[in-house]
Length: 214
Ligand code: PRP
Ligand code: URA
Image (tube, rainbow, N blue to C red; front, side, top):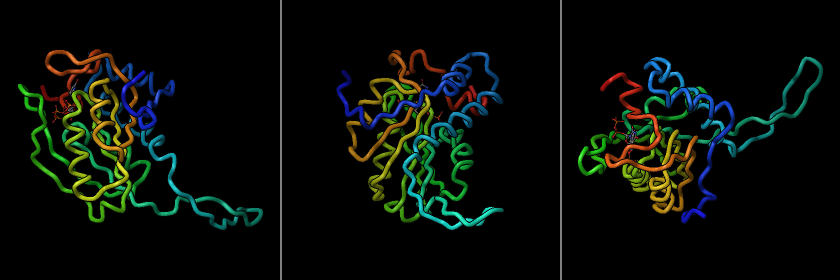
């Protein structure tokens, strides 16, 4: 039994997601394909993370008659990628919600301590009224994501949903224990961290693979 609140952990494991994730993990996947796969997986994950968007009734004239339909009732959203790798998921989320505002949190992990070093923060206005989707493909120690949550909480955000592609148990526990306001969506829960705090089996360095750097 996990020793965290698993009701706030949502594993998106649709067969299409598992298939695309297997391609993403593959060492020889090209930068272009890797980037496209991250976008596609972000769409699947965003679809699940926004399952509870509020709806309102609207009257629609079909070619045959007038009927009552449901439309999304203008919920305020903020998409907040953690730089760099989170940028790879932005287009996927904007495909689903083109009017969402986009904030940015700049952070990198210190290579020795593995602690996050923050270098940039720009968030949309009225963040306390928005559903916030933090995007970062990798949840390893959880240092970066908890720092991102802290920024958003400090700015007043209450509804925070973290979207990662690959997570490990240590990071999941750290994030879910950090704030009761957080729900975590991930496509996979991997085995463990290695000594350099990389996820095993993982997919390597997500930022480097998205942007073709080494
Ligand atoms: C990666 C990843 C996360 C972080 C996860 O970023 O995108 O932000 O590491 O590790 P953690 O859970 O142990 O904090 P990285 O620091 O490599 O920066 P980059 O995206 O700029 O490459
Ligand atoms: N960041 C990554 O990009 N990959 C990992 O496995 C861990 C942190």
